[in-house]
Image (cartoon, one colour):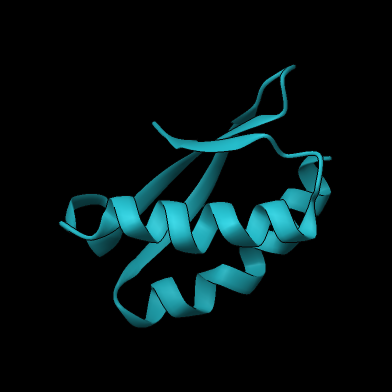
Length: 73
Protein backbone atom coordinates (compact mmCIF):
# COMPACT_ATOMS: atom_id res chain seq x y z
CA UNK A 1 0.00 0.00 0.00
CA UNK A 2 2.90 2.37 0.72
CA UNK A 3 4.03 2.14 -2.91
CA UNK A 4 0.56 3.17 -4.11
CA UNK A 5 0.54 6.08 -1.69
CA UNK A 6 3.98 7.23 -2.85
CA UNK A 7 2.76 7.14 -6.48
CA UNK A 8 -0.22 9.30 -5.52
CA UNK A 9 2.03 11.70 -3.60
CA UNK A 10 4.21 11.99 -6.71
CA UNK A 11 1.17 13.49 -8.46
CA UNK A 12 0.85 16.14 -5.75
CA UNK A 13 4.52 16.99 -5.28
CA UNK A 14 5.07 19.17 -8.39
CA UNK A 15 2.44 21.66 -7.21
CA UNK A 16 3.86 21.78 -3.71
CA UNK A 17 7.42 22.06 -4.98
CA UNK A 18 6.45 24.97 -7.24
CA UNK A 19 5.60 26.88 -4.05
CA UNK A 20 8.76 25.79 -2.24
CA UNK A 21 7.25 22.90 -0.28
CA UNK A 22 6.93 19.15 -0.34
CA UNK A 23 5.21 16.23 1.38
CA UNK A 24 6.79 13.14 2.96
CA UNK A 25 5.09 9.86 3.83
CA UNK A 26 5.73 9.12 7.51
CA UNK A 27 3.53 6.11 8.26
CA UNK A 28 0.46 4.15 7.27
CA UNK A 29 -1.37 2.83 10.33
CA UNK A 30 -3.24 -0.47 10.66
CA UNK A 31 -6.45 1.55 10.26
CA UNK A 32 -5.18 2.85 6.87
CA UNK A 33 -4.63 6.35 8.22
CA UNK A 34 -1.82 8.01 6.29
CA UNK A 35 0.54 10.20 8.30
CA UNK A 36 2.45 12.77 6.27
CA UNK A 37 4.79 15.64 6.96
CA UNK A 38 4.51 18.87 5.00
CA UNK A 39 8.00 20.30 4.55
CA UNK A 40 9.64 23.45 3.24
CA UNK A 41 7.29 26.37 2.71
CA UNK A 42 4.29 24.06 3.23
CA UNK A 43 5.39 23.26 6.78
CA UNK A 44 4.75 26.80 8.03
CA UNK A 45 2.15 28.03 5.54
CA UNK A 46 -1.13 29.27 7.03
CA UNK A 47 -2.96 27.41 4.23
CA UNK A 48 -1.35 24.05 5.02
CA UNK A 49 -4.53 22.67 6.61
CA UNK A 50 -6.44 23.30 3.38
CA UNK A 51 -3.60 21.85 1.31
CA UNK A 52 -3.67 18.73 3.47
CA UNK A 53 -7.45 18.29 3.33
CA UNK A 54 -8.34 19.39 -0.20
CA UNK A 55 -5.11 18.49 -1.96
CA UNK A 56 -3.30 15.62 -0.30
CA UNK A 57 -6.20 13.76 1.35
CA UNK A 58 -8.54 14.16 -1.63
CA UNK A 59 -5.96 12.83 -4.09
CA UNK A 60 -4.90 9.94 -1.86
CA UNK A 61 -8.49 8.82 -1.28
CA UNK A 62 -9.17 8.96 -5.03
CA UNK A 63 -6.04 7.01 -6.00
CA UNK A 64 -5.94 4.63 -3.00
CA UNK A 65 -9.56 4.03 -1.92
CA UNK A 66 -8.59 2.09 1.21
CA UNK A 67 -7.13 5.26 2.78
CA UNK A 68 -9.45 6.32 5.60
CA UNK A 69 -7.80 9.63 6.58
CA UNK A 70 -4.69 11.74 6.14
CA UNK A 71 -3.11 13.56 9.08
CA UNK A 72 -0.10 15.82 9.38
CA UNK A 73 2.59 14.99 11.91
